[in-house]
Amino acid sequence: MKNLKSLLEESNLKITPQRLAILKELDNKGHASIEEIYETIKEMFPSISLATIYKNINSLKDEGIISEICLHQKPKYELQKEPHAHFICQKCGYVEDVPFSEIMDKNIEKKYPNSQKELYIYGICAKCKEK
Ligand SMILES: [Zn+2]
Ligand SMILES: [Zn+2]
Image (tube, rainbow, N blue to C red; front, side, top):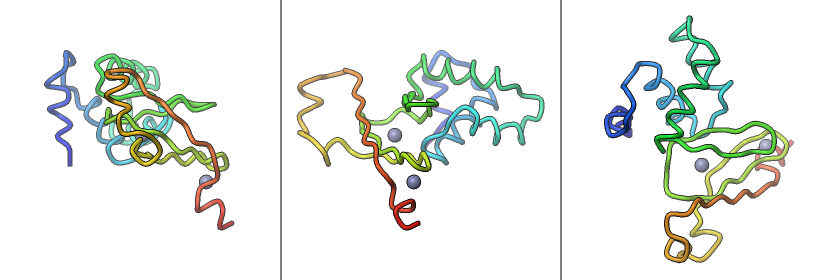
């Protein structure tokens, strides 16, 4: 498991149990919306508000610890990783990471260093296809 605490230690943010819980949730789920994070976190911190989650998400985003995936409706968040594409199921909203190397030239990082790379593939996931 990733050392989530060190992500905060290396940033300008204070280490708080709430922030750690948000990171842990994203580490577990891979991708989660603010509402999904809130559902889990409020079981641990019953007094926490949705607004507090928003604030924490935004500061974690500003520090580059997590990134926002702009889905059509609701953004989801994930821990910062190598640039990659996302497959999004149009039926159930399932999100899957797709390495850029699987879909395009591996030189993309050389061609566009340090740029924000986003690519979304919309379709129907295997589970929904079975139905
Ligand atoms: Zn699906
Ligand atoms: Zn992702």
